[in-house]
Amino acid sequence: MSGAEDDIVIRVRDITNAFGAQVVHRNLSLDVRRGEILGVVGGSGTGKSVLMRSIIGLQTPVEGEIEVYGESMIGRDEDDALAIRKRWGILFQGGALFSTLTVAENVQVPLREFYPDIKPPLLDEIASYKVVMAGLPPDAGPKYPSELSGGMKKRAGLARALALDPDLLFLDEPTAGLDPISAANFDELTLGLQKTLGLTVFLITHDLDTLYAICDRVAVLADKKVIAVGTIDELLALDHEWIQEYFNGPRGRMATASADRRDKRVETR
Image 1 (tube, one colour):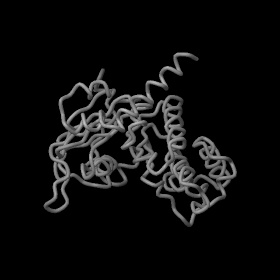
Image 2 (cartoon, rainbow, N blue to C red):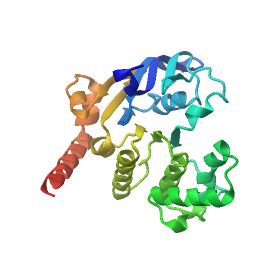
Image 3 (tube, helix red, strand yellow):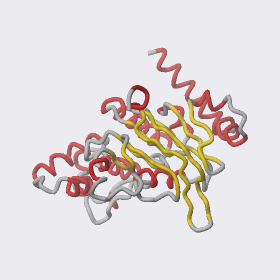
């Protein structure tokens, strides 16, 4: 590959996902560009998380092709996929932390899986660094998930997702359940990490504020496929009922107003 082709980190082509007679996706295609934050939106049941699980190999499509960094992910031998899996980190909904492990031990899980020869002193040092990188206080490392607030659990999950210094980050509803201030802080953290580390981010969300604040492009799932991909302005120009209702409804208008106020504050600095 060369030129524009090199800029495609994730390439999904004509995949079909089905659970028995229920077809979730049919002929779905999507490209994720290097260095972008791509927001993925859609109504309930459109299979946003199923799409992510297909890309990372937890769900095998009935048909179609998925490539990550130019390597096919479908039918790939588990050991053969390790080199690619090392290049991504995943924050599942709710953080998906192991309740019997401390935050630091949770962060160490992927390190122990992929680099079993790393000794405990270095594991502890790396975990401490990732905890702080995710915006948690240093004393969060020895705590258990049950001792954390919802926002801290999300950040602990993010610290684990960053454990392997990934190039690609998958975030599944990272601000769900957070109050507006905590959600905005998480968005700011995500954007800061993306810019500092040069990450490509695949972000599933229903949070309109997040879409306006940090996403370069947005992919819309409907009718069992990706019906549109573009900036919010480009999507607003489309004559599609769900897109117009989503972005121009009451919550969409509030998010637009909030984004306008944020832009004005930036301009006056």
